[in-house]
Length: 468
Ligand code: ARG
Image (tube, rainbow, N blue to C red; front, side, top):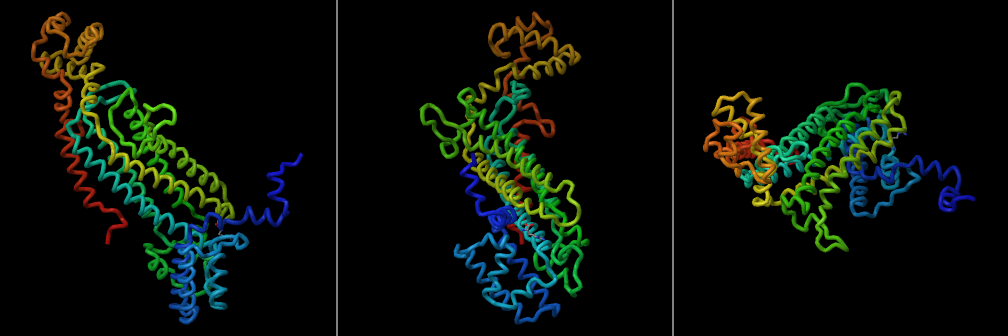
């Protein structure tokens, strides 16, 4: 039996199938601004070098401006029969200005045109992501400074390990975002060479000025090899690779937010701006935004992998396979942008539950290391032995179902006779975190100076989009 749903779709025959598999206008219309900017720079250069007349250039620019206005207004009709954004715009230009439109494509091919458009789109998006990272880092640094002294449990193996400060924990994430931002910055610097003028693959016999178009479009220089220019998608892969790592970072914080907001932990409060209620269980507040940020990682790393597999094994130069780059690039980078916006919103919103965090910080014998360090420092016991003595004191506390600071001096002395009253001074969580003053340590005073360092650095490293 034939499948009606699918049978119907392809009933019109091979022409329709070809059009469907061949067309990219359904997704590459997103490149219209870049396409028009590239065409304007190209035609300006063609006129400057005497390849077309000034009158043709003016007609081309006026026509392109009209087209931009129509697309902006939503009145432009994209046609699938015209395949892609390049041909849709060129056909419309011909309708508007006639023969001059045909001169726009002199010394250019869709191969260098599409390479340029995609590069420009990726570059614009990297600049936007850069300002989003700047926002997220600023919000988080402010929150860290505000809660520099709030103690909480630090975890290894998701077991209470040692007390840390909430501010210190937040600044750990800021460090990761700074590396993400640097990776995108590096990728942008490598991306910034202009492929326009490579033409189909071999360059052109027209006396074009590639430095002129490169400069007009904000590139550092033209690409040096015409074949590489049309075959290269490294800039997109690098952006998606950096995005995958960044998404992985966001997913770790998202997972912490999921854990922290659970009824079992209640470490932080997140308002209903970023949570939803359950339709059936009135007590629930689900951390949907955090869960979705966590999930985007799969999607973003998926885009990177998909494009890497599209590119693998392609002989030089342009192959139609490369048309499949766009949906991965758009989806991967736009998903990261949304995840960043949601994470920034949550960071602005969330507040630590200081009382609960302090109680949790003291549970799980989290100051056991402080006790062992005290034995080493005050009694001169080798660390390995101190570890053993501490273990026995922890066992006493565990037996009595209490915390380390509630173990009596007599009980401690039954394990090691040299222990004095003084030991209690290191068993509180505040003392513990306050003592971690080594560079990079969790002491509130360290957190305050690190937050200041970040504020100064963020003031200096403004988003690319805001620089002059
Ligand atoms: N739509 C095409 C793409 O996205 C544009 C380049 C087409 N070039 C060609 N020689 N058919 O890759």
